[in-house]
Image (tube, rainbow, N blue to C red; front, side):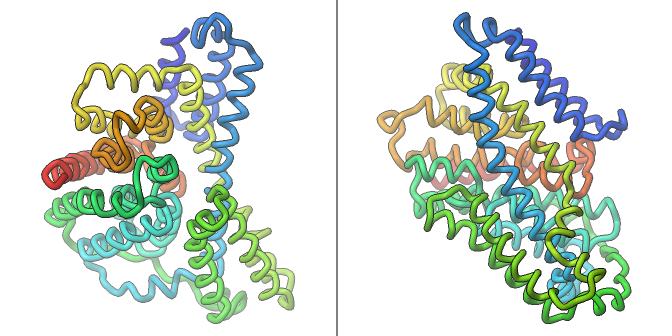
Length: 430
């Protein structure tokens, strides 16, 4: 039963990977995989967990994990609603109108560098959602859209790795005391930048030419629904609301999703006041109550299924056993962290980092030790190797409907080259 749980998890991932072949939405597969893993876990509890395992213990574990998953889902729902609200007010047009270049390479560099630094200020998940919305406004060709999105995933994860608030794993290490904010920026910034720059340099040689932008929508509807002043207000408040989330967390010490919901609440009130005197038809298209219906719910459910499946492996002990086996077999901290990073492209990096934090105390590896710095880099950037290996990847995969196999063929090798380039640079400067 212990092995069957892992096999069921792998089988679910395979079906997600071949979604376009079997013609079944990946959200449905993810939900079935997540629930089935827990069913198998509770049926074989005495074999998988131990002879004294009880149903009550597993119920408690589900509630514990659901709490953690709900934080991510509410954060995702809030961020996606804010981005959709800005888009419904045509707020992104003031940004896209300033992007005048049609050169594919130049545009790719500009967007990836912006993503790299923006994800350090916000976080890689929020940044990925914002950039996905921008990409849909800038690119018409599906191949271009998917490739740019793949590079955005690499940029977002690389940008999140060197910031204490850029990725959930760096937040965990920062709050746990394994790293300090100033040190992680000083030591991991250059490797993270190299992780992005090397793939960018490579694609600059074979992604030449010009992009095609989507045709502009007729302006009469936009003018009728909202003015440019209202568009700018919603854009500015939306961006400030997203930027406020890490500040809210530092001020209140509440989870980030609370800050995101607070920002959404403020925007909701402001938009209601902005459009209170408009006709019902126009108002219905611009308020949060209407916009939230257009949020990509299948992407949220896909996230839920994936995280439920990973949580079952964590409860069953498979992830902890894997981390322990890696630690015992590989004595080099570089080898251990490189493997943890690559493994994080298959399973969620949060339980992997949590396992490492539980295995090693401050006597073995004191604060700001090379092990913790490298762990932050590897766990943050290794997830780019597969599109389902990071929160940013899963979000963009759902929003832009990117095919798993396509990403594997076209982007994964670039992510691997960037990943190992960053490790090499860290090794040279550590």
